[in-house]
Length: 244
Image 1 (spheres, rainbow, N blue to C red):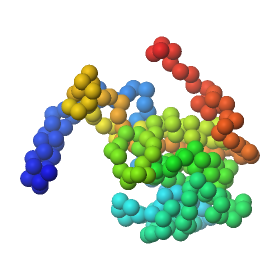
Image 2 (image 1 turned 90 degrees about the vertical axis):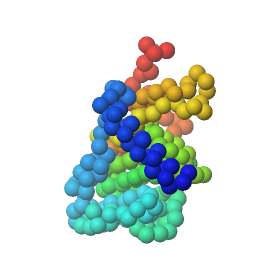
Image 3 (image 1 turned 30 degrees about the vertical axis):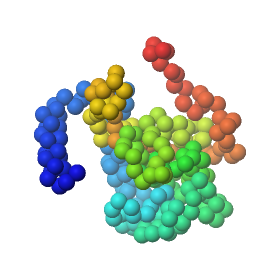
């Protein structure tokens, strides 16, 4: 696509968005909590940017832009962890074996990850490793994608709803949920290339991001996902039988 055509298309989409904007609430799902993960991150800086606090960012390497994390947590002890070496990385390693890169018993007050969980091949394993590295009373914050375009292939494995993040950090693993929801609503439709019965049909309940804020309340020695009870993982929620 040449630059002129791209400009025309972009302008047309902006005009369409302005016209459709007043109707965007129709696309929301009333059952999905709408939150601002940027405000959640700002609150973490307020709470943990203090002397004596230890902060671990999982997936800290600068990829899409400059990171301000080290400055944001300048009064705390900030550690950047990533699979590849690079700017803003202190420890290089595999998040699926996170605890093995630190001294036995070493833990953090805050562990967070932004736009990385979709790139973990086994995110449930990473959640277990985070539980090992987090102090009791400490917080975990994960911001990732609910619905987003394919990117950084071939290492783009998952998309997460807010409920998926709750399941990754359940009470069975020792966590209590502080907040979870979706952010940045999207407006969508099936394209002309879709199955005939779906073409041009609007798609509701799309959100770019999802996030989870939790607190570790206890250690769970020997936790395994294979032995975990389903209802313990989903927090006592039940399937909406009226939709069956």
